[in-house]
Length: 369
Image 1: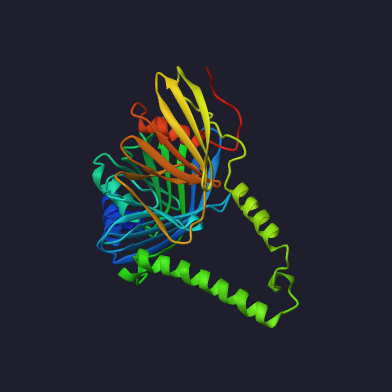
Image 2 (image 1 turned 120 degrees about the vertical axis):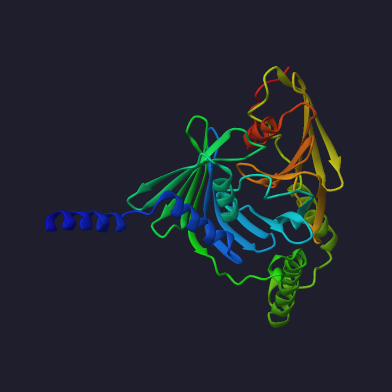
């Protein structure tokens, strides 16, 4: 009898030292994220298309009452963009261009976002068939995802450590291939953020102050270094030098080679190519006709002195190399010193996204007629 009691007690002890139940794990995860007042997350995000993988450094900030700031920097070309949501609007800012798209949108509530902790938990809560498995180093949760503008994405795996902290998220397509991977390096659930950390005005002020500081530094340098050639007063060749500089400046705003999409919907062909000279350079208009008609406009990007805010009635759309502005019949984005505008009443969002992701520094035309 004593032997049976000992064995029964040992079984209870072993069970108590094992992994927690699925319900307890999910409950603790939801509680830790849903009750947070503010957080800061850093890490990396990888986006894969059919041929390439693009890596971004990631910073994600959240403040209760739906304040968000997501900073993404492309590790290949250092292209930085910021998604900012405050109590007024949603913006996608490109600091290098001093440009911002301003959205009227339900982002991020209207779709899954693998880099936002609240969105990840929401996906778990919305999936009644979510699966959780226990592993040596933690837990893995598999859930459905909601990407209305990208039907290719079907499900995700959320990796937790033994402390039930999210460490990694992988988003898969129907062929079980990882298309988006987010690895969290640091998660601070007590970041102590405030509403002023999410103001667009504060960001613009910082840009202006940087410009003023640069001007002051230049002026001071010239005052203290009169031998510096760049500080000397121009001679009688000023006009020629100025004209040359202006010409060089104009050249930097021109697209030297037309950039063609490597993906074009079937039975659709390039039917015309037109280059228009503008006050700031040139603009290329490519017209595609056939089963899916569309127009693609390319123009060299220009950094502006004052913040340019472009209103968009649509959604931010995550592309391979940039964050685009998606509206009912168009998609706009900036990447590799080129601004793109794609317009069509016949293309699906998936087709627009495929065309945008296929654009690169290539001169190959997928099809002409």
